[in-house]
Image 1 (cartoon, rainbow, N blue to C red):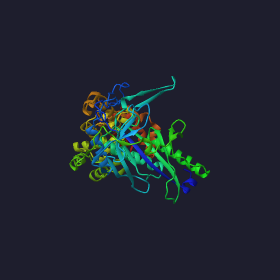
Image 2 (image 1 turned 60 degrees about the vertical axis):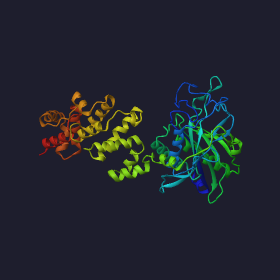
Image 3 (image 1 turned 90 degrees about the vertical axis):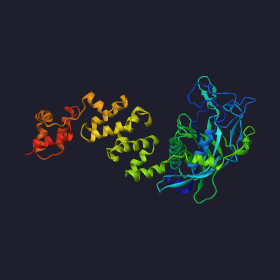
Image 4 (image 1 turned 30 degrees about the vertical axis):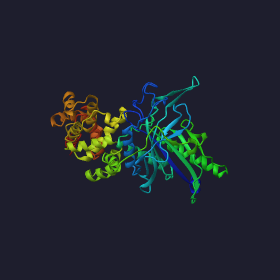
Length: 483
């Protein structure tokens, strides 16, 4: 928003996050919950809603829902009841969706997010279980639509925030924080491209100082966190212009267009009564005991913020390094496995993980846990670099070869003759040759220009294909050219 608009209006945002659980089977039947298979190959009479079929609740999906609720500081409702949400759409074969209406599995929790002014508590209004719908595929060439029912019945948890977010940036930070917690819980792959994590946003404006909320628009069709932020920024501007020009903001559902960078109206916003909710007659309500909930509570892992504080305290690494490390649960676990091997300062290990190792994952376009690298192998490589067996530059090349072959650093060094050259005799011969070809640089060094020394060391490294010990080479050159 412009500065003028910022002074007049306050943005109010609430987010609805739809999370697909990665259970082996769907929520109410035995069909495989497996993304990317041939269309309509993972369906059965139950998830297609054929007459005479009955749903049976997936126990693991229920445990996952409780797990997420506990991690988000929610109250778990022990009385489990499902409801029918009635609406017609081609991707909903039953003509209704099994969901939870008045008794969600979890409610009244909170999430702490980082802001410029410090941590901020964002309320979690509710989290409820439901089944996913199918997927419509629109073919522009034939002007037709196809439907794939494989996704029908995939277990979903809808996590609804309170309207506590006050800017698109806060919404973005909320989503990043929530996603990281969900990854640590290992209940979903959280892949937005696959649709495992989807987000709808409710946004409205009100004049600064007002208590009442403005009329909200619900924005859909955002396939990345950056798209959510961009769509909310657009809505801020659109709604502020309407209010300032005297137009009435209407409650509606709008779609985000990535190509056009704008939202456009899809339909008027439905109210709860439009769905004619009533208790699901095919699923008998039941009660979770305190023991059931405590059993799930004991499976909670160390969550990101807890891990951040412990790693910083235990290993005395910087907040910057720690923040990067905890962004991937596998990366954080790998760091601690490396530290357990020992022999190298933790800071050195962090530098390699955040630097060359992260660069390799980006270059190879893989997740960290897909790399073939044992903690001991990395520690051996770092030890050899620190001990002067190979140079830092060659060490990075060895890392590539380790990831390609799975061999140890020692094997690669021996097979390729990569050990660093440090003996005076060998280096003296190379230095003699370089000096004889660099009269002007030699003169600069003799005149006290230390920066020129780096040029000669670089030439030695080039001549030896990176095998020379640069520190040793510098000492020998300096000794040779000193008065």
